[in-house]
Length: 400
Figure 1 (cartoon, rainbow, N blue to C red):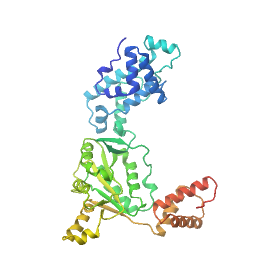
Figure 2: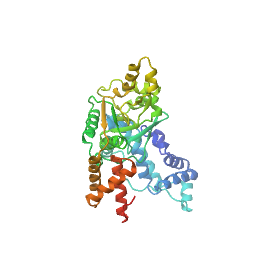
Figure 3: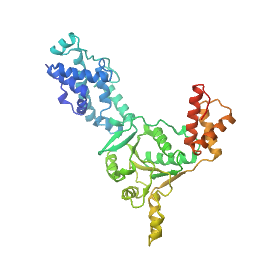
Figure 4: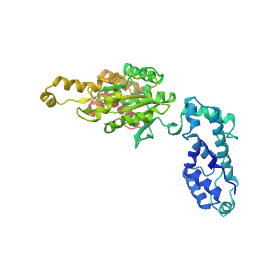
């Protein structure tokens, strides 16, 4: 039996690590029904038993390889195109083996074993190694990235590797009502970052529920197509910041290094790591990491009056407490909302939801909601509108 030639792959060897593709290749090479069964099971899990060509196409598109990386970075060479075309030609030939399986596998299929079908050609077209297909793939990766960065905007850092965050928030800047000056400051700085201009690390501070984290999520959604990505690092792992930045420095994306709800004790050893990363708020052109933190406190480090009273150098202690927040080049305050601001947000959200309630009733209910829930804020306004909308959709009274 002629081998499919997958051992000669140059740039797409990692595709062979896929369970279904690897098992299918083994089955075709060795006429091994047991390997064929493994491939069939893996394809059934993704409802692709009758679409092996489409399945393999998806694995190719999501592969992290030199062609994809260079396409995104707009540094593709003819040699890389030639090597990639070579690999596509081999993998397309592999899909045709589904139509003509070897003897033992064909007998098993004839005896009732579910057959793996090739299916139809998709985005790669009838000839996978054609110039037209290569141009199409170059444009795909130029606009969507490569590997785990296709379809994923946010990540965590675990065991020295980036891990995608699934089901991220879909909130947009237009969903966030008012706070126009605050949003503009964040957006302008982010655009400088994306454009390779000097930018500042950012601290967004203010009362809880005012939209600090949501603004970062919305900015990420707004500019993901321009190569913006985010990596969230928890407060207890701040000592790993230098490791994270080292990994990110090798990637052709722009990354927000996001630290949510930051508040540290003065003598916390993690403060040293964060301070070192923030040294020099204006980054040089070409840097690809911007540190963004949110905090409910202006002076991130918690003050301890006993420390201050017992300290011989009380002034030095206070300055140390301020020094961390001062290292952020841009600080944006999200102030708490008064009654007028709160009701303004409620009205705008109600309009977005097409919530048909008289203004007097809407405002009275919103105020009662804030009283019960413990205060006014954009978060409370959104929670109230969501609840009111659900009640009206179910045609039940808005009661709480």
